[in-house]
Image (cartoon, rainbow, N blue to C red; front, top):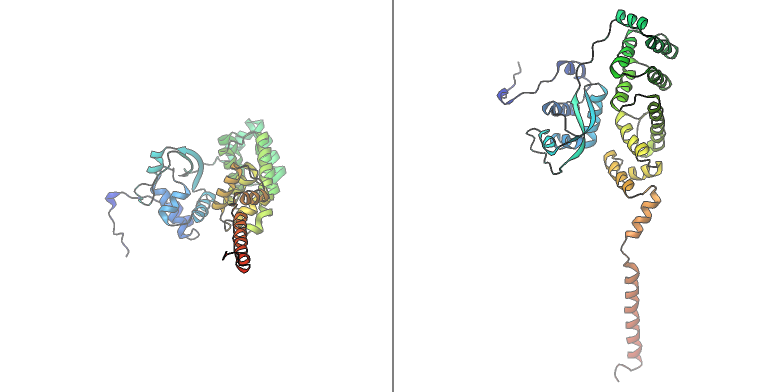
Length: 328
């Protein structure tokens, strides 16, 4: 028999049994370490840097763990401005973290609520009869996906009701997933949630997003060898970095490769370097090299000239000595 020898009077952290049952075998020790930190600090204002300092994991490892839990719908990560007080409170009693910045925008991590109860097949049928728009969505879905089961039927109705997507957005989403070969209901749900969180709810915004996804994919293939990425498609974590670099900052493939090569392929360090480049108006490796050359101290030529003067003085003295001028 194994018993816990600690005092519960100082507080306890509840871990949902669903998480343990589903992920105990597959989740790494580091992933559970990160999750325990998040559960210990439910305010949701912790970021990868804080978690790294409190757990002893690298920021890159923390990012991978966060990606694992986010991809399994255990947490959601959003952008939110937090005050210094909330920023400090997010670490609870973890003494390893000190707060020195007044305000900053950090990724907010919160445990997701249970999913909304699925509609029954009878409810779906009644809605299809009552709402022509829904009928159009399901007809187009069948044209795109072929025959689909109850899970996808329920999911389409939930997307329509919960996210408020118009028919053209849902249809375009399904066509995109078909083109990507990701037509499982879980994959459709993930991208719908992502679009909803980022406010992509019109056909115009969807078209912009699809162009961004194409750019991310092209950049991934261009820098894959340099970054030593594995697989044929980028992970969620890698996609977020590539979106920032290639789409938001419009960095060239060559500049991204240069930053990766000069940061031991660390994505966090590469991100910091590229951010400095963008802020300085640098758009190519050639510009980086040119600026580095200009910033070098111009002492080489002066040193050479000084040495030459010294040599000439010595030679003049020797000549004078040989001619007997020094003794005069």
